[in-house]
Length: 219
Image (cartoon, rainbow, N blue to C red; front, side, top):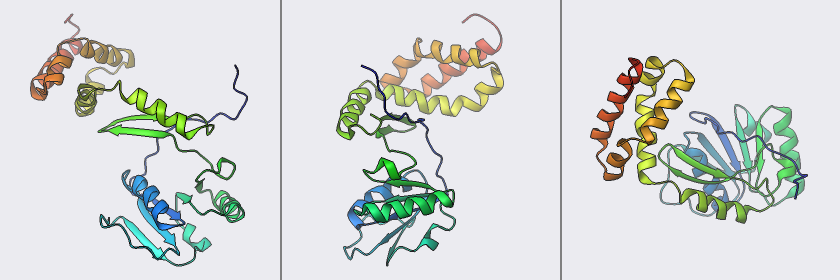
């Protein structure tokens, strides 16, 4: 069976400090706003919904109870619509595209510059699965299946590698050498220490391995 539909380029966006706007009913808009805010975005919700804002308010999420105006797109990087009006969403999409702004309309790939995958996160580890918009539910099932493979030790290793990354790049400038370091780390006793929660011991072992490889000796 061959897929004949449209293909998407998978990417993770850095949203720290970026301005984003979410338009539509508050409950659905709040859910999307929280996802953006979790990535560091500054978010504005524009809604006519009179519902109360959830108790867990965030200073990085502003709620404006008024009609959406095209001026709301000024300085914005991403606009998200949960408005159940295809004609209005089509107009928003055209306006965003004319301004070079990424537009995402929930359940409307035709008027979206991207689609959202089913996501699972733990620290720096992100598992994202998409079915190209064919079945969000299947994407969720596959996401859960993939996430089930990731252990707490894997997440701890990702954190440790993030801490070591500057030193790693300096000590091992060659990309293949850095890959070999990670492979050896995962096959060493470091993973056992991480499974036990002995993070400091694992860090010392990783640092020792890095020094050995950087010195050109066989571990």
